[in-house]
Image (tube, rainbow, N blue to C red; front, side):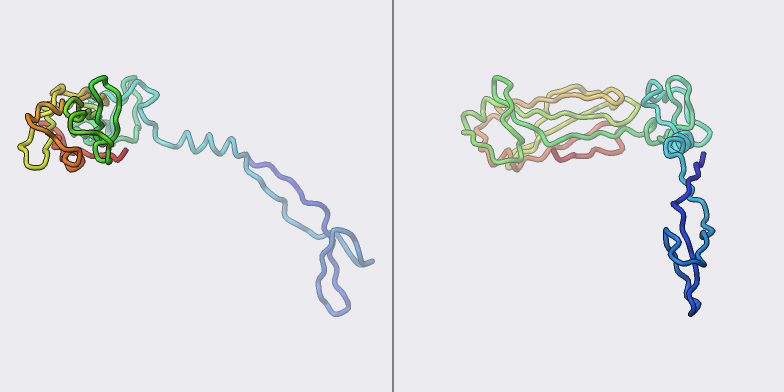
Length: 212
């Protein structure tokens, strides 16, 4: 829908030298009302609704993605309530597992957060020995991640497995904990900052680390 509105009256005339003048008041006896086009303004609310109706839907408001329904004719996913024309790709969400995790955190024996393991923490080796590393995995796909395995690699140490579930449900999260005492020796704070984490799963296409 388009609405029309007109500007205030505008007058025009030509002087003795043929120059055209414009004014909002008739400042010359020969001035006449200028012939101006109407100003058209669109109904913004209606325009937004038109754009929304033309935008492909997602499954967030339709019960989520249902991989068991297979791919739609255009290769996109089908929602739980049967809604089609979604944006997400079936192969991306229903055939590939994508995991992500933030930088692991360190917690003391009372499960209180001490900080990010990559930061310089004010902690003694004795306090560190009674602490544990926590890491949270997120499954960003609509299929279960299986055979999940996380290992921590400290300098001069062999990889050590971190305790946690070996599956992560679709769009779910899973927590993994590694007590520092399992290293079997004293661990210096700088070793923890230099630690590497290896995250794998049987059906993963990618594992991304997200800065926090």
